[in-house]
Amino acid sequence: MTDTALPSTKTWRPHTRGRLDIRTLLQVSPLWAILLMFLVLPVALIVLVSFWRFSGFTMEPGFVLDHYRDLFRPSTLNLYINTLRIAGITWLITAIIGFTLAYHLTFDLNKPATVTIKFMILTIPFFTSAVIRTVAWVPVLGRNGLVNSSLISLGLIEEPLNFLLYSEFAVILAYVHAMTGIMMAPIFNTMNRIDRSLIEAARDAGANGWQVLRHVVLPLSMPGIAIGSIFVLTLVVGDVATVRLLGGGQLGTVSVAITNQSSLLQFPIACANAVALLAIVLVCIAVILRFVNIRREL
Amino acid sequence: MAAARVTMAAKGRNAVFVVFSIFLYAPFLAIFILAFQGPQGGLNFPLRDPSLHWFHDLIDPRSLSDFRPAIGRSVILALVASAITTIVSLAAGLAFRRRFTGSATLFYLTIGSLVVPSSLVSIGIGIICSMLGIQMTWWGSALGAQLTWTLPFGVLIMLAVFSHFDRSLEEAARDLGANRWQVLRHVTIPVVAPGLFAVALLSFMLSYDEFARTAVVAGSENTLPLELFAFMSLSVSPTIYALGTVTTLLSIGALVIATAVLIRSANRRRAP
Image 1 (tube, chains in turn purple, orange):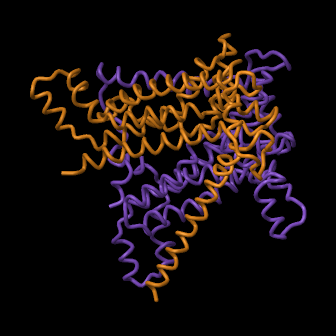
Image 2 (cartoon, each protein chain N blue to C red; image 1 turned 30 degrees about the horizontal axis):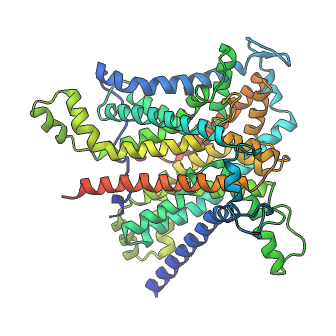
């Protein structure tokens, strides 16, 4: 019913065996070339350079583990703790709100057009400019911003709240703002394919609304939650702009450190951090995929 | 009783939707309004003497915040990125209809391109340029970095479009004597044209607004998001709200058009 509203990739499956003729080769070589040059090669080089020697100004090929040992300094470890804390809080909030909104779109609405419009309302902000989106929080959260002035005029506070802007709070709020839609979309996609007769069967068997949610809808939505979680995790840990603009200079994350180090041409150090960050992300993805089978979603 | 409770829960979820939507659009609304701030007005409410002052400032060559060169670069870059994304996604979409050697690897690599943390792509390309002594430019290294972001979206949309594609149309054309090129030119491309349009529009917007992957690799001349970022750290004036208003409205318009075109074509093909 509602699946006419949005295009879906469900009928396509990755194939493992097959042939390769000239025509196919011509069709896929541009995509291969771009991904090899701008994705595979850069990541491979990051791994390679992370083992190189670095003297403070120049780097030379080698195989040293110094940069990895330096990751365990308290100041550096702190960056990882910050990054994981921010990612974890953002993930939890976006997952809860995203699931609720996906449920609303899937089960509460009758008209496909309403579903489409509400879906777009929720996903559009993700595709707008990250810098503008971030800037837009200044007049809302600032010392003289909308929130503070409203709270003061309501008499709830006497002094403006300073933690609203240029803080970890602001960064997480901006992430929730940008990424709940991208969490909601894959959950919606999965939920939409749940056979409604399963829910009726559970109701007939005496399950109440909460039990249906807990034992039918939630387990069947796990693949979507998994995909959404991977998106949110990688977007948060890879972000630099939001932390720089809203974090207030005090807040350090791994990606901010990586960008700072590479702009100072401290490539081997930046690379060791990048490899560690990638490793953390891959472990998280592996754990998610260990428990949830997303193959059917692809 | 049970029915009433269900309705209550549905109302609750609708309330979550409404509140969350207000949260989503309130910041945009704030800058839309403040973009019309008078010349003496500040970055916050209240709005004093509403005017178009900051929109003029945006394109005033004497102003500190003359964003025109950056806008020009970003538009050219977005056009190129969009053209490449559309063509490459179409080609890949055609190929992915069959099984071929390496199709699974290529598919997972495309997904990988979407989920790799942006800061990694950025410094990885930075290192290549630095090692090979290549000058980093917005039309070179930054274009490559942006394609790792726009292509996954393009390819996924084309996969979805081709999953609804009726291949008997192509067979009919072949039976009537069309060669491969004629089938592609006169049957396949016209049928998937709405999808291609959506890919072109979305990838234009994604490139135009891209910050995370472009940041380190754009070289000395900034794209618009980088220029904005730099401007933010220097001084902030309502010019940035004026620019934000124009950019955001363009983004929203492009997304709505792209989705509408996709849905209309999907519905039309489904109809008997």
